[in-house]
Image (cartoon, rainbow, N blue to C red; front, side):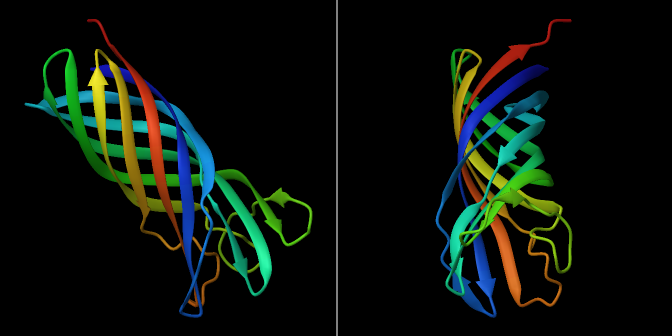
Amino acid sequence: MRFGRIFGINLSEMTMKSDGINVDPTNLAGIHFGGSLDIPVKGGFTFRPGAMFTSKGSMYDLDSVEYFLSPIYIEVPVNLVFSFGSDVFKISLFTGPYLACGIDGLKIEGSNASRSIRYGSGSGNDINLFDIGINFGAGLNFRGIMISAQYGLGLLNIAPATDGEFEMKNNVIGISLASFVTRKK
């Protein structure tokens, strides 16, 4: 079993639809960091659960008002990894679901002052508390140091409105640097 420490950058956007019309968001840069475990399964497969602190979000215009929305999540990815190559250099491909819970964030609406994001459903809230999605990625591993790129596709509508006329989903490109340490028995 190996333990990994991960740090990286995100380039995220929230896809949005309002009354059936797509809203064109602007990408927002953020960070992610955390840890994961590599649990060998069989052959070149490993199971990689983790816990990450990650910032996502977008800037967008809606009804001539500019918005800046940057939620911060604790995210739990659960990836299946297939690695191939030598003991020194390996290529890894991975995919799996994630569950994220909002813990903080920033919202700026028009020229108003910034405030913390309000999580929950219904009016008066900015984003639903939970996000669910799937990750796809690849990495290069050289002696326990891995550089990887991944795409996180949000599957859950995180818009707080319950009438179905407004839809928001997270999409994130992440570039990570990870250091893995083998646990000694």
